[in-house]
Image (cartoon, rainbow, N blue to C red; front, top):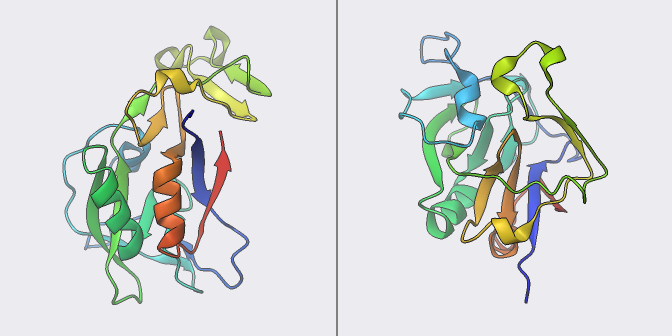
Length: 190
């Protein structure tokens, strides 16, 4: 039986939900390279970060920050990733404004080159005209994302080479997150 994979994203339609701002240092300073947490590779553990709210509301188990899209997860979500994908993620404790419960910054530390360009609705690549030579050949945008499952191998959670926005999970991780009652996450098959 062929494995199934899903993009995990935050659900903006949760009634009364909170919105998270970008993490800061304990002194309130911006994190120098906030994008490091969404690039699909291991990072050095940061100091204990604080996550302010950009809008108070209902706490979520899975969310992303407003600009960098850094995943912030509650203990139930962290448990699933820690148990099922320990070699592919890093979980760093964070202090979320107004919360006593534990929260973690989720760094998906694995990247797989598996976007199926022909099966996607539309892909746009960075070209020389974009003036960003470091991104040449990477994806500027992807609509109707589909992956080539034969290239995934043993990965259970990963980011996509050249297009780091989505977090991809296999169906077993998805089922475990749903069984733990994840609030704030939504899944779309890729």
